[in-house]
Amino acid sequence: MKKSFIFPIIFMIVVTAIFTFVLAFLNHSTAERIALNKELELSRKILYIFNIEPQSEEPADVLRAFEESIGTMAYEDNFIYVYYGDDGEILGYAVPVGGPGLWGSVEAYIGVSHDYSIILGLDFISHSETPGLGGRISEDDFKEQFRGLDLTKARDGNYIIYRPAPGGNVDAIAGATLTSKSVSNFINEDLDKFLKGRGNN
Image (cartoon, rainbow, N blue to C red; front, side, top):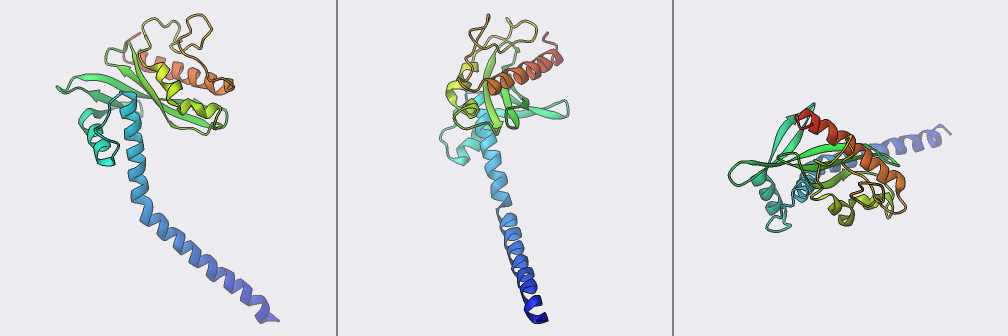
């Protein structure tokens, strides 16, 4: 009776130990590749913000284009990405922006020209918004609206205003009002903080 009771327990302990070892081994063996993929994806997004096209989508070409044109600069307790021209002059900054979305936090970077007058681009690093609705913030049709927006005409920190409101400069995502509102709120708030901190306003 005791044997029949103890055997399943020992069996489960052994099986659990084996699976734990296998998972730990897989995690360790793939950690470097996962980190490289994250770096590659972030590099692609920063290049997209500044409208820089690598020679190809091959990882080596993407990373080479990133290293040739992008640097970093301390910003608060984080850093921003800096876009350098061929002769070393600063062409723009990619500033971290983010806040709560409908289902979780949304993180993005927004590009600003070197003279803080124009939005160069926008891309989202992470979000958990509903695919086909709020998740459409990651689609090019939505993001491309932000390129070339004039920051000098904004009033009271309202750089992003959805049409048809007065002064509207971008279109919200149909059927995703809360996500759209969240995006404009945190962009306006974080962008205003950056611009005022740089002595622009």
